[in-house]
Image (tube, rainbow, N blue to C red; front, side):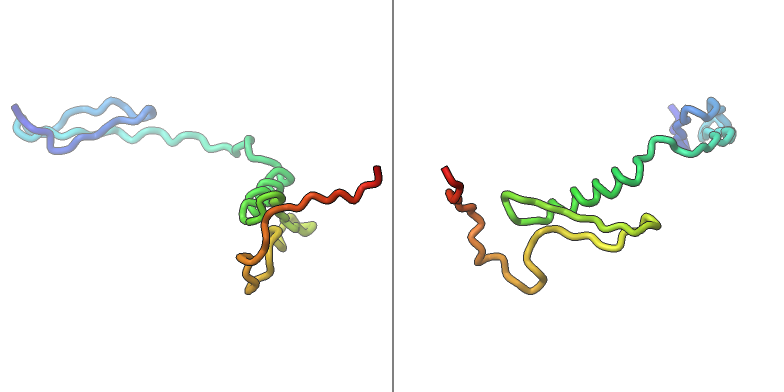
Length: 109
């Protein structure tokens, strides 16, 4: 029984390999496949959905258990000029904040 010197797995667009070499050390070769035609992908999301997805992802940074708000500010050239979420400013600790909501009963009956 002889061992293969190289193992080549053909892809869907490749031709069947032909064995070449000696009986003791056979090798495989693949003829080059024709390049696949390239076209523009038409399933990309539109700009509004893209920016809304960024806002949603930013909102996940919020530590507030009841309101997670994200924002993505975009200029007229569709460039992101700001991203943010609700939370404390840099340098302020949010560990002392009571995260529980209080019920307000100040509506007139």
